[in-house]
Length: 123
Image 1 (spheres, rainbow, N blue to C red):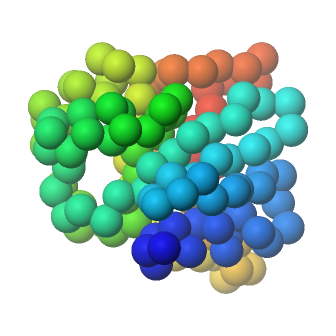
Image 2: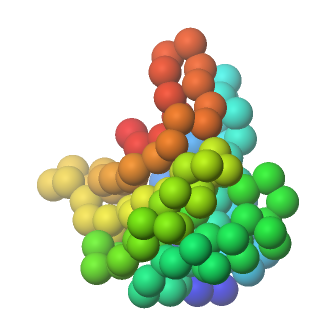
């Protein structure tokens, strides 16, 4: 298991509204009461190109979100268009926290799912 997946699982294990379970490899499911489950792949690649995005979509059933944990990650335009055209969210999660220790989750996403409260995604 990559450090990125371990980091995500550890952060969701803290008290919060969501929990995550490891589905295998670099894929997790995020479960939040009263919201749709989210299947996310956490990639370790430095550059996400269209082939990488398509590979994740092909091999991860029900992929909702493709994520990276480094701000230096490059998202190529064709990969972004491919993911958005296929209604898969994408973005980065920065491994920082506030002074209170609360993780800051930042992401860009396509509007795949909505709830009465609005789009799911970054909090």
